[in-house]
Amino acid sequence: MDDDIRELISAPQAYLFGWPVPLLDEIGNLARAAYEGRIDLATWRRRDQELRGSMPPHLDPDAIVALHRRVTAAWREARRPGSADGAAAEALLTLMGRLRYLTEAAPSDADLWSELAGLTRQLREYSQHDNLNRSFARRAELIRGWLASSTEFDVVSGLPWDLVGRHRWITTMLGAVPTYVDEARRRALLDPANAEQVRAGASIRGHDGVPPAIAAAEVRQHLLYSAFGILLEETWRRDGYAEIGHDIAALWNKPATRRLLMEITADGWPPQYAAFDPGLPGLATHPTAASA
Image 1 (cartoon, rainbow, N blue to C red):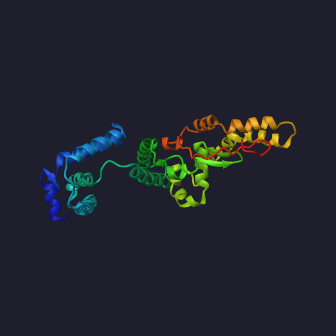
Image 2 (image 1 turned 135 degrees about the vertical axis):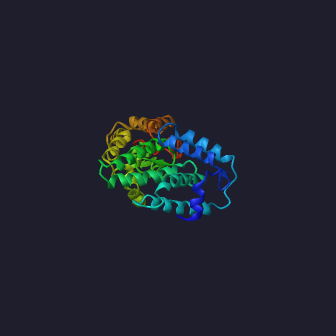
């Protein structure tokens, strides 16, 4: 163990890189409380920001990271059987945490997404009976709960919401139609342009391709508009139904129908996508092919 590290753990420290050690310990207690389920994510983020807001910015964060790496190496060495520094392992672990809390604030959704990806990869690689794996599973489930309301990442598809949201509206025989969220997920997962993200998100959604529950959404989506389409088409093909065809097309193209379709399909979408309307005009036509 290097002498400067030994000195840091040999006597109680009041400050670490200019920050009070009791404050760092309070920041660490917040993180533990969150991961143990004793406080929610919003509370953790708010309190963490409040505690950090009273302190000056770090002048040399790279020095903190470098020291953290050295302390981590010393801790690993101290844990080796027969190590002369074995008694210092706990103090080194405490110092590691304080150094980490200096530079790592409460996680953003992107931070949590990255952590969840790592945890779920571990879960796919190890036995479900492994003690460490059960610990990973508990933590992954907690993070899934935190991200369930995320407007950036979709834990069901394992994709960022912006990729899923591109399929909020699709083109059909009747023009633009809003999608159920699972249908948008299905389309996003099958989109060749998303191949890299689909592979990266496999462990999060627990499936290499399209999970069966999402794959089944295609039928539900088709039912949303197909009856209108079939009836309208038949009025084109049969004599004497032009007036009905005109009425069906006019009903489909009503703004109220559009709003209803958006409400029907809104469940599961983040607010910015649930309410999104691209403003495309209705395309249903009556039997004379004139726009209704």
